[in-house]
Image (cartoon, rainbow, N blue to C red; front, side, top):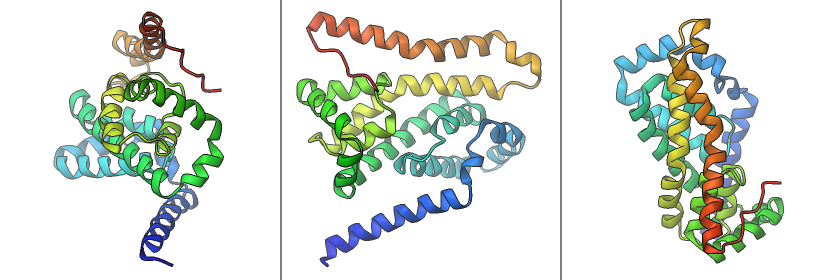
Length: 237
């Protein structure tokens, strides 16, 4: 076996080991709003005393979860808004999610090509057509609109000819509005101190934005495409 193949095998084994550890030790129980809310006071105190280390650990966990396509990214985003506030969380989540997505794309491109091809062949066909037709704008559009789950886009894009740097910066821009919406919702959740807080105007407005955001963006992108004569995006089914 060549050195290059041995390196690939080692990376695959590390990835498999991390996923197995996550499943065996049931670590996903920590990626729930119930757990985060129950530990909010302790997390807030830890953050106040060790700000940079806590942000670094949070960012590391987010990157690994995204890179390995583990569940919990939405909860982590909401938790970031609740614990760190809007602007700090927006910056940290934006970079962590994009770095993790780019790592997932990289792993797919160099290590999991056959598996991704077999698993997402139909979606790959649609994505390839979109990239050939519209280039980076296609990726920007599917980042704004949940045409496919984000982890699928990360993996399938690895099999396209799109440069990794283009994938990175387009993903950074395309995911930023959605990240802001979720972070803001998390901030409002973090401010709930009693049952009456659930009906606070700020929280209701935040969740209204959360629900209307994908619909609004989808209609806006359809309007833009209709003016340019572009074909509509494929659906997630």
